[in-house]
Length: 479
Image (tube, rainbow, N blue to C red):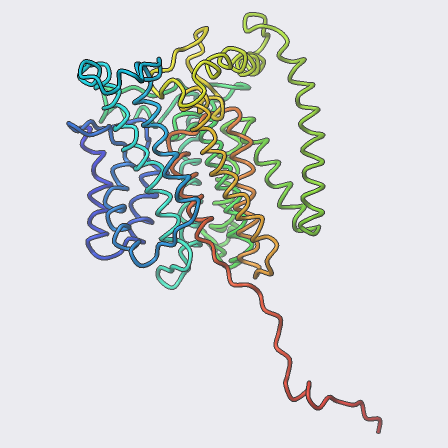
């Protein structure tokens, strides 16, 4: 039954064969990414495991290779994204014998023929292939298939945002069940097709209600995706006031746009994830400041608020996490103490292998802390300072690109989209200090990164003067 994972790939291939990579992106890849769980997989011999979205992106990637010959414009970001996908494979390949310092034996026959080295090398190749499917191809889709493209007379950027927020509203509506009766309806439905596979995380509860995860494995990952949905939904409403304005039911004040916004916001609230909430608050605060002040003043005010907020948060968290896990009095305090102890326990591991780390699947667990809930620390442990540095270069490259665009005289739609992108980046980076970048989030993050790199907005031009009026001029005549 696991072969059902290949259905989105077949559908995507059919659309690509009909000559429309854009329709394949809208109707096959995005639904596979946002509506189907990525923790179920199919294992094909001699290939890494494939999820719904990974299978769907393969035919789309083949189509994009043909498109790229004419449209691709090389940038530094392309190198950082490629290296980030490669770092996981390198760290896995070097995770044991080579990492232990046996470089002098690298070219010896007994070393090259060793079973452990072969396994590490094979795992490294699998990791790189997985990086192609989850990092490089989504990045290519964002860079090639969004900006300057249209579908059915509507710009692809609006089509993508529209499709994204509607699907997230659907996920939120289905997840009401999980909120009221803690559990995972997605996992229950998946059992019929993937009886041998189990969910990645057990469903959680907080404040007497279930923390919805939807098809995204964990509530905090779902919170990050809903964060993106809220920001882009507000952008769509501001730039297309006619979208979804028709009433759903005659006589009732219910419109599609209202239902979608309510669904996305409700989904974010039902995740009960404080990290994404803080990220969303900071993101929306930045957008508000940039619309009320000049870019320079808004940046100064935002950085000042961030500094004060960071200092207060540090003092509060230090006092709140002063106890041990056993002494913690609530689930929230246990979570905070756990994240503090992660830094204490895994910092020595980074010092022992600073370059390429311990490998994605082979890093040792310390004090039974199997989950490193901090993407930056996780990268430092598994892929070393090289992998973490490349990831920071990706973030910095997107931020610099957006900051430069803010200073340009853009039209309203482009200007608001730049603000939305920057808000999403602020929200995600803030949240990644308390969760790892995985499942559907990593693919959306690099799709977003490619989209940012592709933006070439048309600058707003000053209205042209009447040449006759400029040459002759007018005088007021009194009768």
